[in-house]
Image 1 (cartoon, rainbow, N blue to C red):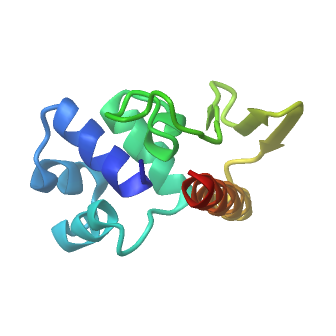
Image 2: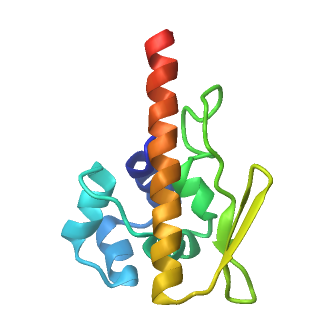
Amino acid sequence: MSLATNLRFHRKKSGLTQIELAEKLGVSIATLRRWESGETTPTGSRIIELANLLHISPDDIISGEDSPGAAGRATVLLPAHEKSNGMLVYEGEGTRIELPPTEKGYELFQNLVQNLMNNRKNLEQQINHTA
């Protein structure tokens, strides 16, 4: 499942409308609609905000572990979240990265998320091509 599909699934699961979620985030309804359509992607810091508002982990939005169709598909897991100490943390594949919650930290976190999403898309394309 795509990030857009996962976001829409978890928003609905939380019982929120697009308008309600957009207002809670302080973004326009048009921005949220573009995220849910896959036209654009939220930044790493917005993914964290979305996860907090929807009471899920950023991984649920990115890889959609609870989304329909999640079983039996290849995913890149991103157990990343803002820890109680305020640091942005990525743990996976034997790697741990801690970034400060600064503008540069969020930028680096966003790049990490984007790279993982691109790698996941490439993996899914390879799987679909060989199937």
